[in-house]
Image 1 (spheres, one colour):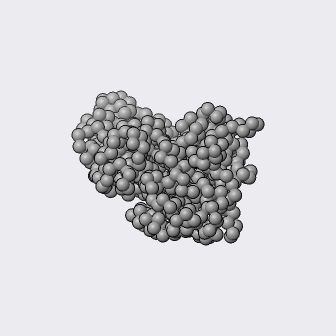
Image 2 (cartoon, rainbow, N blue to C red):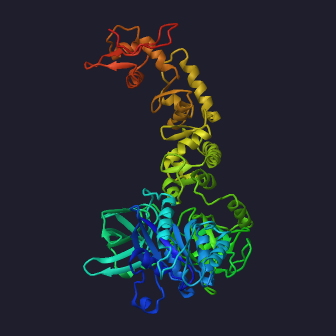
Image 3 (tube, rainbow, N blue to C red):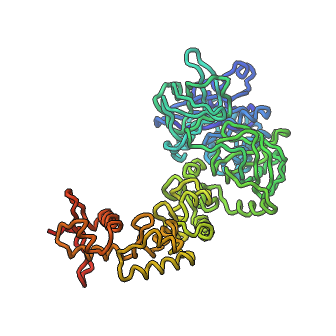
Length: 606
């Protein structure tokens, strides 16, 4: 299915053409048919000669019904622009063109109608001249008469050609269906209709209704009057919803893929002023009214405008909307009812402007943005982002993981981490590095997984739940105690100092732990230390014993006491250097390498 909206001045024959093309009545209300005046949106469809289906959204042409017109053309990718041969270009022609140009609609046909009443050439030339400077420049022209049927065959052919030129919709995209009608059906409940520009709707799928914030389920689905299990974009759809009452939904609401959209009431935009003679103001540097109405899809919400640069502004919306970078919308003056211009969304999560000069700096930054979602650029600007938020903005995350860290921000945090570690060592000189959780809180990181790349950038090591910045220098008094212990152990390396001897050196377990972490001592247990190379030296001595050997034999070989021998053998066993057998004896598992041999033999000796 392909969806086309009508556009043009009131009474130029838009609805007549739709009737002739489809055989259906697009005017839904009796009042519309009685007066011959389209008031609200109408819908009809037809199958073209090659089998494709064209669905039409017929919009009102009278100036009093501009909001209804905008709700119809907002989500539609193509337009059938109608101009009467006997009247030519008219005020609402300008207004509709302003809207289409503001929304960036690039595909369409120009139908010059009522050719039975006047020669079409003058009106066609006038219309092409007005279209020339817009997104609809050079669209094909068809001359037609709804009363006589002349030209209808060519119009069908051109519509067929048009829909084959339309870009393919992304049927895997997140759903955002703007509601243009809501009503109830006896026995079915709440039904909404709209134009699906992207994504796929499926029966029993769960959606979220904005702004009500309620979860709903698709109870039933129709397209072109037929029930369907699923419908892909682009399509006109009617969706029967479970989980919502009619008084909770209205035109301008949106059905959304859950957890994939950000709603915002503050956004930064680039504005392009409307330039038709009936538009408000002229030129490329807009001086907009402070209070306008923003139209996107079928939604219309009040917006307060704060100009920033020559063509950029910040909008504060009266009602939050689900928006993405690159979305196109238009601004309308509610007082004059004229269209002021179109906009493209640059940022849906803009920074606050509270410091002096912040607005000027922000304007300069916005000048670098083109309205195309760029995950790497967004991450670079923001420093730290959740991948889901980046996708919800419409951008592709530039890397894996739930949280993403920009390189510049990572380096800044690395500098801060370096400062934190320096301060932590001054405050806690005996601690073996800074706890990772304390560092995470100090850096305000939302995920512990962000800490390793920051530590790497700062050349900081991370082990055993702590961060270490190179070898930790010991306090002078601890260093003096370590030197005394080392001198005492040189001749008798396994005769560890007693608790009393350590106390005389004012060396408690915290000081011993710090010395062990710095690599100055080997800590076997609280209050029990040896030289750093005691492990290798012990294995070398024990390797000289016949196997298996007993604790007593090990104690004698090491020239030490049971107080040292037991924890030392336990350490060697934990590190895979020895093995304790079932009868309580021991054997070497990994003997020291022979001189000149750099590889160790891990095979148990016989």
